Amino acid sequence: MIAGSHPLLAQGVRKRYRNTRALDGLDLEVERGTVHALLGPNGAGKSTAVNVFTTLTHYDQGIVRVAGHDARHEARQVRAAVGLVGQSTALDEMLYGRENLVMFGRLHGLAKALATNRAAELLDTFDLASAADRKVATYSGGMRRRLDIAAGLVTTPSMLFLDEPTTGLDPRGRNDVWKMIRQVVDEGTTVLLTTQYLNEADELADRITVLGAGRVIAEGTAAELKDSLGGDRVIITARTPDELAAIAAAVGGTADADSLQVTVKAAPAGRTPALVAAIRALDDASIDVDDIALRRPSLDEVFLHLTGASSSTVEDHSAGDVTDHLPDTHTAEGVSR
Image 1 (cartoon, rainbow, N blue to C red):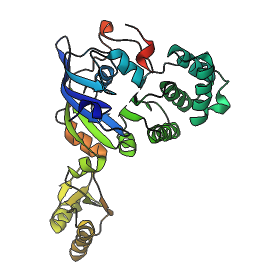
Image 2 (image 1 turned 90 degrees about the horizontal axis):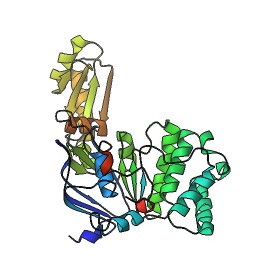
Image 3 (image 1 turned 180 degrees about the vertical axis):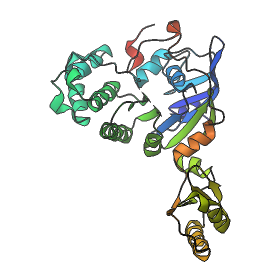
Image 4 (image 1 turned 90 degrees about the vertical axis):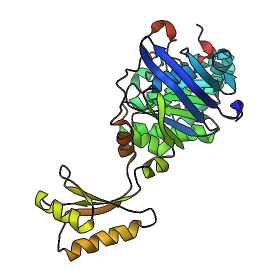
């Protein structure tokens, strides 16, 4: 494998904060022109990983190459090639939206005319032109987040890191940000996304990596991860608790008293036959049910299955060692240690 062939390549990355292992042999490859999601419970190491990849945090061991550059020895080149949108906004709320983008352009070395033109282009792209000359303090949460992402793209990075970009947004604001992320990828930027919203990863990610205790515990497409739970299922909901055992016996399924549901696994090639067989078995046993449906496991179920029994009790100390971190920024080239 050629290290430079991936926008991001991490091998055996370890990071310790005092007695806590934040990253414990992390391996990760991100394909060019994709959205790659990092999932994991709190403390799994997601934010620490992003800080390592963007050179905001030193790592103890391993190899990290971003945009073809070594993150340890070529940090300046990495910062020039990437954009970062952190969990908290880096915008100046007392400036206009346009002024914020021009400011970021100037901080990253763009001439005034170029920074102004780039700001206008991004405002159009992110549907913010009508609010360009309003103070950011008057923006809605979704508008601020779109402007935040626009600021991360001032220098047209080859890779954009989005650390929980839609936290706190309402569904409409979240959908607006999703639209912007798809557009960014269509224009050639690779995105690494961390998120607490599993439907967000399901909707956006070409590939998903699940972290636990600082290491990879599962990886694949959303469909592959769902299939790892055994494929589709017929879910039968009983009308009363007394009927649950009879339903389970009739269809050969597993009963759950809490949900009043019986689950029957369906073979990948036999989804419809499994549903038909269950209906016939219930009819033969003269059992009426409240509901019967065929469905695929959700990403939520995959997440709970993978992390529920072994969820890390490690706290994510990505902001806990002040001497080892730099302030929030969008493209790190403008920040000096």
